[in-house]
Image (cartoon, rainbow, N blue to C red):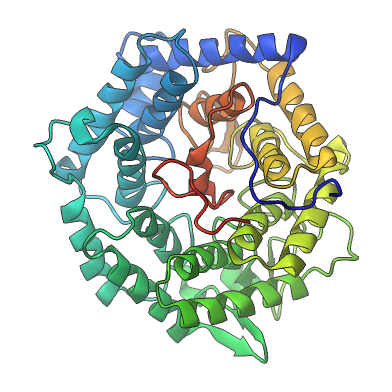
Length: 449
C-alpha cells in the first residue's frame, strides 16, 4: 500500500522523540503549572486571573481548561492534581449554565461549555459534577436547543458561533431525547437558505452580518471559505449529520453540492495557498495564511475527516494532496506569528499530525514534527502562560501580545496539541475542530475509513 493511502484504521502513536520529546514534556509541565495557578487563584501572572475567572467558555475559559486537565490526567501519572483541577473547572463551567445568560455559541457561549462537559462526562460519568445517579445534567440544555433550532433565524449558520457548531454538539450527544430532532431542524434550515447553481451548493453571508467597511467593499456580500465561519464548517456538520443518519438524503445532497462548490473555488492544480478567505461577486479576495480558522490547512483537515466519513476517494485525494502541499509550503509563506490552535504554530503541528494518523503520509508526519519543533523552540520561559503569549488586536486595531489561558488561542490548546504528540492517547478533543470523525464516547469512527 502506497504511503498516504487509506486502510481500515490506524492507532494513535507518539510523534516526538529524543531531545524534542524531553522539551515537549517540559513545556507541558510549565503550561500545567501556570494553568493550575490560574484555576486555584494562586498564580502571579499579571492579568490572567482576571481574564479567566469570569469566563466559563470552551474557547477561552474554564471549559477549555477542564479539557486540558482531563487529557493531562489521561496521558500521564506525573500530574497528580490534574483530576482535581479538572473537576474545579468542570464545576465552574457547569455552574455558569444556570448563573449566566449566554448565547448558543460553540466557542464563546453555552454550546461549547456543554460540548466540553459532555466530552468529559462520556469518559468519566457525570459524577464529576454533583449529579444524582443516572441524571443527565445537560438534558435541559438539549430541550432548549431543540426549541431554539425549531424557531431559529437562518442568519448565523457558521461553525464558531452559529447553527453548524450547535449541530456538532447535538451530534456528539448521540441519540438522547431532542438531539436528533434538533439536528434535523438545522439541516432543514440550511436547505431552505442554500444557494444552488447546477450541482453546486453554497451559503452567502447575510449582508447585515458584514461590518460597515465590508458592506462597502462587498455590496453583494460574499461567500466565506473558512472552517470557522464559512462553507467548510457547514459541510463538516452536514457530513456528520449524514453519517449519523439524520435527514440523510437531504444532508447528503447538501454536502455533495457544498464540497463540489468548495473544490471549484480552488482547482487541484493550484499551488498552496489555494483558498482565499472568501469569494465574492464584487470585491477583493485576499489569500490566506496557514491556519485552522481560514485557509488551506483547516480546509484540508476538515475534508480529510469528511472523506473518511463518506468514503469519497476523490475528496480524499484532493484533501491529502492539499495537506502535502501545505507540508512543503516554506515557513516564510506560512505567515504564522503566534502559537495557538486557531491560527498559530500549534494548529499546523496538530492538524498535520492528525492528517498523518489518518493517512500515514510521511510528508504530513515530517511537517508536523517541524511545526512542533517551532512551537517548542519559540517558547519563551517566564513569559505568558507556560512561556506563550497570544497576539490580538486592541480597540485601535493595533497588535497587542497577551497571556491567554484558553483552548482556541492560548496555552490550554497548545498544551493539548503537545500532549497528543507525546502519548498514544487518541486526541478525541479535535473533533471539535472537525479534524477527526470521532464521536465523544471512546474515539470510534462514525464510519470507518
